[in-house]
Image (tube, rainbow over all chains, first blue to last red; front, side, top):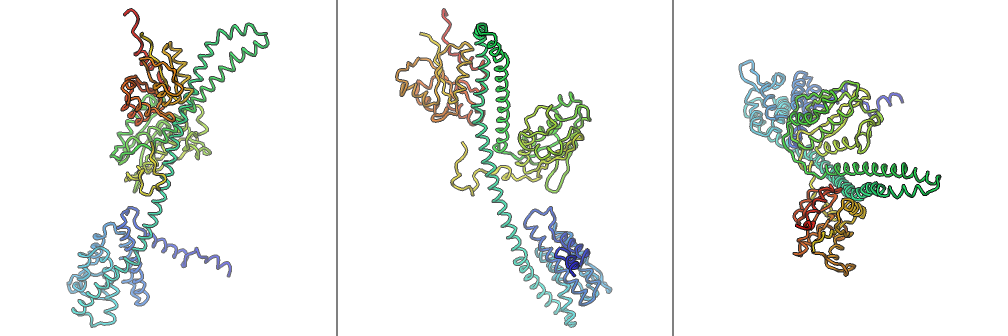
Length: 486
Length: 139
């Protein structure tokens, strides 16, 4: 008993594997096509899904109550064809259903029906006139309803009142049928679709608000880091300047020190000489180097922070010619390394030219920098088009990134552990990521040490300028943060 | 009497002042140099106020101005200088860490002889200072 209970737990579908399959198909059928972005179309797709459900119910009814296998199958066919069309072009799909149901009756009349219906209903073409009118004149959602409901309605009417198979009754039932259609469509709209749309819109708004808050925090952080880096620069330059001045001071003192050393006792002179010859110059040199390193980092932080400050401009950018330009600039390095860089055909997309140029300059620079001296030296730049974005791949046959470094290489000032022999400040990829994110894309990579690395840059095909340049004067900005940057 | 102009430096970062003074000295610049921790002190010097009652103001001055300073910054200082016809004529050299276009444009509107981003190319800085040297004797 117990084991059976676990077997039939809440997760397992009611009819086992078949039930699961049906549930999967059902879900696939009712999910709006991913290409449908327009909310109105999404709404229609949901409506279609609901109607597919009622259709299946009808067919089940026919199957169980009337043992009418053929008609049930025909209606299932309808449902599936509607599900598959997913309302991409609703009018066309509605007409297709009608056309596919045109048939000649035995006595030569043209019928708008399907063969399964004909067998039970046996009505002639003008009985279906309300249906045709609905298809041609009314909005698509009525079309579907007309197609879906005329079978069971006529079925019920004709079964209960066989005498209704005459013209006035058909017209009467056509009118009541039309009224029923309208009512049903409104019921669907108000009780099924609208609450869902409202819910989705609420969720969307919430998400947008969160995004804005996040963006704002992000922007403040960028501004803060910019100001911080900017302010750090001044004393840093001072330190470096003074350290360099101290070298000159030491030179100036040279003569005096020599004279002084000559007058000291031997052992003290020895200590003083070590300080003068080694310790002091060494310390100054290290101070200078550290200050220099710090300065580079500060400059990079400023550059990173500036990504958030520059206003992006969306324009049509031919990636192929842009990429050729980038490769051209690296021609000397490529030649020197005896590397080959291949470019596939690349699309034209709407994006910010400078940002994309910086992204791929950095990625190419990276790929070239970390080629193995003794390995194959190939870099391939290709792309794939997907529904809403393109993914550009920069694939190299370089040294690869060790697995344990994967998490950190995209962070600022972090580098892979196998790069000590190559100069770099560890900011390039962080910069690239920052740019890609602002363009609304993503950056990721696959890498195997000793084999190579492939960087993937996804760029949206339809970037939103208001998302790319998050407006500073968002209406929801609380008044206490209303100060603008100076 | 033809003398080397007095160089007034408005710079809040003491280390920068030290480096500037030492570098100029090493480059054999004989102009007298006086430094101020912000623009307000330089203005006080020009006006002969506060600690500067005793000061002697020569005819010729060169001003080296940092933009980011506490109290009276470079922009405010230049605005104050522009308000006085005599002070307005003093040549100004901007010496700033800022490579921000907005800062540069703003400074340019207020007027300057030269704008250097720190650390400045000292040869060029020297060339600007030398422009105001007195004419060679015996001309």
